Image 1 (spheres, rainbow, N blue to C red):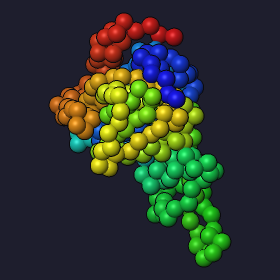
Image 2: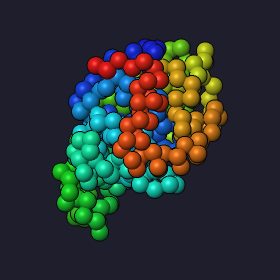
Image 3: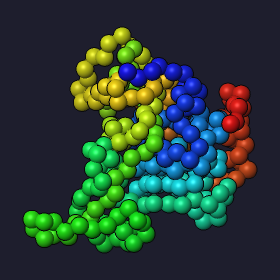
Image 4: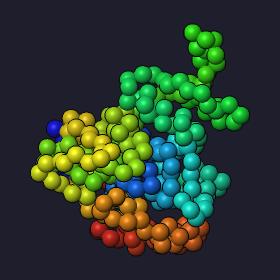
Length: 274
């Protein structure tokens, strides 16, 4: 059964220097509060995996905590580039960043293979791109039935998966609904799972299209209302579009970014770095 913890306790217990961490969530249910706690605790030398490393990973990269990024698309949704991500790749600031880039289908299948206990997944993809020449996690296999050459992607098994969801019950079972992306697959592929939730309830009520992760899959649950802001949690909050627009000029400038991190994250909770 999943343990119910405070967010600082859960991050300290589950996320360690050098870990591979997947913080998934598509459009909504993006676990920003957990990412901010990682910054406060100074967990470093991370390999981050995410299908859409948007602002959440821009902040972690700019804070100097990330050595490698495994991803399939990067940008500030509806606005433009991720300037801290770009600065790290192009200029090595605040530290050099290794990248392992994939297609969306390739990343999703990497999680599926990891969740299934398989060494790799097979798909039709990557043709017409040079992605396979730039990574050691894409290869080809020949179908034993048709002889067709197919793309193969290595399984992705993060040390830790971090997701946000709407509800958990007191036994640690979690329910999410709306756009759920690959949260389920990331959780099933990971060695440890942290879920932040909007609400802890006595009993989960089935929701149309809802996904339930049983408590035995999850390591820890933290009650963090608003934990997806500036993204949203369907049924609980709305997307803060103004923040995403405001992030562009903040992230373009190293000094503005550093001041924002200090004022809004490091000083906000009296952080103690490890």
